Length: 203
Image 1: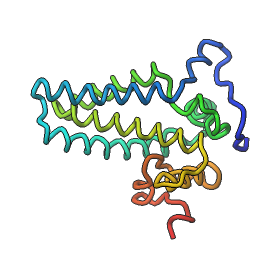
Image 2 (image 1 turned 90 degrees about the vertical axis):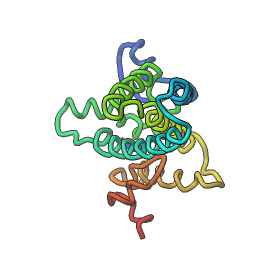
Image 3 (image 1 turned 180 degrees about the vertical axis):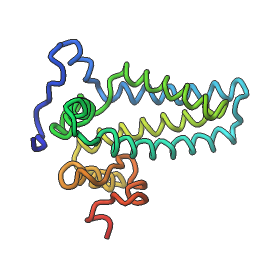
């Protein structure tokens, strides 16, 4: 199916499940922003991190998110659909977005999934980074919020006349010219490093 500027996909026949696949973009962005601020505040208040380390860890977390975003988009959302199960999973998570890229209600995961992901990353990062989790996860979730904002702006609005135009063009190339290139949404950094920059931009 070719990308359609209008319309929406039906993912579930059950109306309740179908409704849960949709959300207003402001809700998950607000959730991640609030949690990011709360983590920094809690970490500073209880002495788990200092102001200086909070800034450094925040930037590390944000940088880490750009890599996770790229890898998830490339290898999970664009997985090989060589079985019916993989095909259904890929379409549910991402394929429907390529069929209907202008469907504003499906440009972010639902709030319940957002909260689950935030909790999941907290426990994983706590296990790996210890008390540094309060700074790293804050930056990571902030990066997630920025990703959601950029992704929504690209699909909901015309090309801006500022620095976001670069990201708008980059992601539009992924949707309308090369779906095996330009996996980075909030940053083209990893496309450049890992060799998936579109031909138009790699020259």
